[in-house]
Image (cartoon, rainbow, N blue to C red; front, side, top):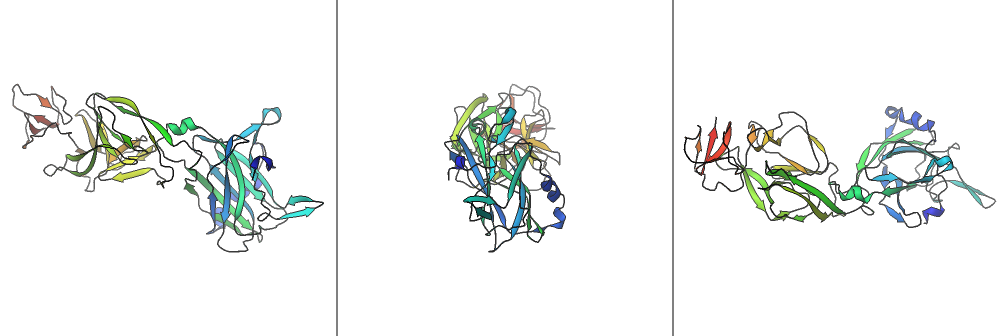
Length: 396
């Protein structure tokens, strides 16, 4: 179907949808239906140089008698609804009822087809589309399944090239449907990942490790080789002798959607590139756990577990203790299985292979150099765990 030749309802943003407001105000009087709304993948239209998607309803039984519907569809950053300039440069958006004569009722007279439903839309927000389809003749749809409408969109490849989230999230809200007997139904709000094609799968993502801290966390939506000067570790347990010291396992490369602790003795500032598997099913919250680490591929508020911080003793994972932390996309936090009685978890990267014991006092004066657990020399150690003469010590 050449959509360019079938656009018949390109309404401007100024369309007023009073019936939408009326329906949306009374969800408590509606009945939840098991019928579902489906959003298709993107299809490219070369004539328009744009993509479009369709929105369908799938019913449980034959002879469904819905006559009206409304819904809001919110697109993610990087996808915008397509429009052309209308009169006085007013935008005209390419959104329309899908002219399927096997679904929408119509009448035919003098070789002219007239559909019995009206279709309108508006944009409450720049990336949120609100649609309304209704009939003044109280005529229901002809079948239980069918395409309701389509919408053209533009995709910004640069936005997705720098996105940690593997596939865009589309949210559908305030779905209200009524039948010919004026009974109202609703479908619960939901989020999905319908778009696999038309979205940039090649990503170029920044990795920065502060030269002072030397350590950070990372999770990527693609697999990649370790850059020179950077080491990566997984963590599934604590040290056999010290319950507040993490046991790390070196990784030879980055695996997609796997959380890591990363170490760069001289710091690192570069770009990692890779290809996202667009055929894979990804969790809608973009949160991935393995062992004792949990990574996020979109900015996430975390108020439990342990957050990497440098509170003066070098980077460690500190108990969130119910405080809320905004964790940036591509970062990880510690989620140990045991109770949250430990204030902080430390780690080392193999510099102290000759650890023999723990001392609960400050080191004796001498020519030995004191190191923190990342291998940096410390002149005046504060409270915490350090390495001295090949042994692990604790300064009170």
